Amino acid sequence: MRNELNELAAFATVARERSFTRAAAKLGLSQSALSHTVRRLEQRLELQLLARTTKSVAPTAAGLALLTDLSPALEQIDRALDQARSVRHRPAGRLRLAMSRSAAVMVLFPKLAAFAKAYPEVTLDIVNVTGSVDIVAGELDAGIQLGEFIQKDMIAVPVTGALRLAAVGSPRYFASRTIPKKPRDLQEHRCINLRLPGGPYRWEFAQGRRAVTVGVNGPLVVDDTDLVIQATLAGAGIGLAYEEQVSQHIAKGRLVRVLEDWSPPFPGFFLYYPSRHHQPAALSALVHALRLSRNV
Image (cartoon, rainbow, N blue to C red; front, side, top):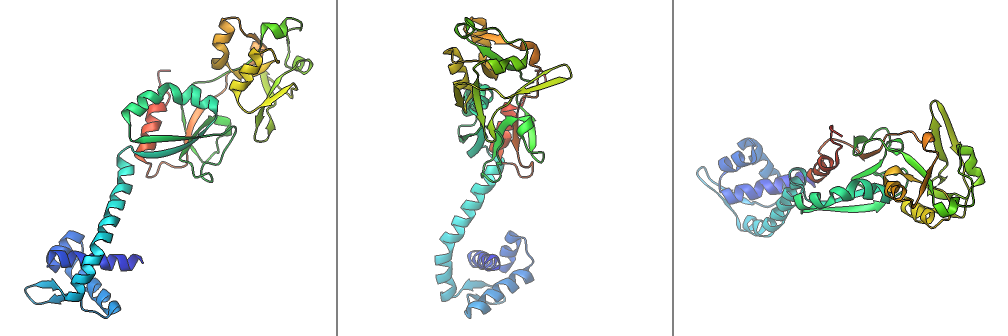
């Protein structure tokens, strides 16, 4: 099929230019190579497509009929190729991105209005996921995820600084309960579980070189940290969320933070994608828009 397309395109160019010399220059071929290509097509079709003299070239009746039918198809192929090439140089089209709701709210949404204004021809198609995801198998262009969940062969660009987790509960919840002083104390409390692909998240804490992982129990298991926060505000138990998500609730007294000295910073969110080679312009624009400033 590839050879046939080359032969048909060569024939069409000669027929339109009425000259092997001009057609060869336009196609970047030698005249002998172009003549051989057209002759091979004629032999396969068992038709003379071009009448040749020492001074001129013109399509035969069969050649003119073929050219008439062929031209729209070749033009459509050219338009399709031009459109495909434009994706590399002009930010446009659809980008399919994998991220959690927290990543969308904390990373993407604060810059979405400016990005949409700067690149109105780009559509961001968000697939909501929690935990690690194979973006290649999922036919996705990129994702936003915590560094620890990103596969080692991905290109990863930081889009936030370090993050901290905050264990919080409402004043109403703590009104009749003791404040946990150590991570193990959480086993005596009702906690809101976050579901990950591999099962409920085991809460991780660290103090100096000492690391502790706690499996908590409680009345609710959800797959979204915003639901964790809402359940915590309602007094259902202790929840674990990103510090940024609950800072205002803590400042206004709606939530009480516990075990803060057991919550060290860790690497934050990264925008990740499979390869730098032939990167679509839309993805390059998104990387530039979300990349963490060196001044942060």
